[in-house]
Length: 219
Image (cartoon, rainbow, N blue to C red; front, side, top):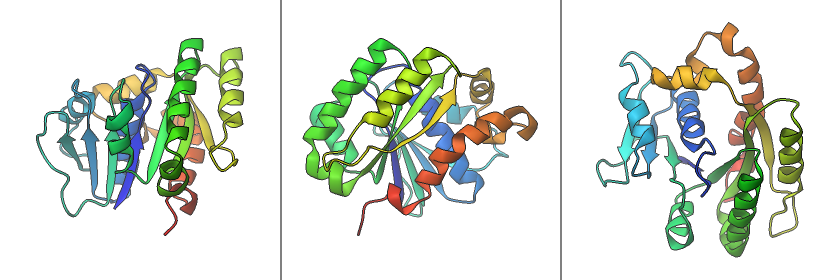
């Protein structure tokens, strides 16, 4: 089963938006998808409750309350992790994943939080290096703003414990299109292509990474 965890201990990084859109992407391709919400605020579950019945099916699992389980025939599991998840709790969650997607927004506070989070990941050297693959996303950026370029430069400079670069995938824009989609229980991939053409282009590097062998642990 493909397992993707979206995590960043800092609130406001867009984890739920990223997780729900990854879930939609795979559901539209006919995969059996479970969106597992570990956040007590249940934002992913709320989004699913607004989702029209005639759209590609995504099974919601309210892991924070202990209600529901991932169906056995699930092909892709996307996990939405709450802000503030650290230490043993995070270690337990990361062991469930093949890939960890780390969204970071362009602000000094978020950069410092991302640095602390990365240092925590480095402490899990064997886990990070061998059992799970990491990728970063610059999220909610304003294109051509100085903060966007500073964030991208920072993320591109991060190194894994083995000295290799931590994969940086893409910059996703701050756009009202994500809000419009979320209000209807939809993903960006389900809006009119003419409306979201630029957004879809920005998603392609992340999707290529998630669909590549580089995003999954070696056997």
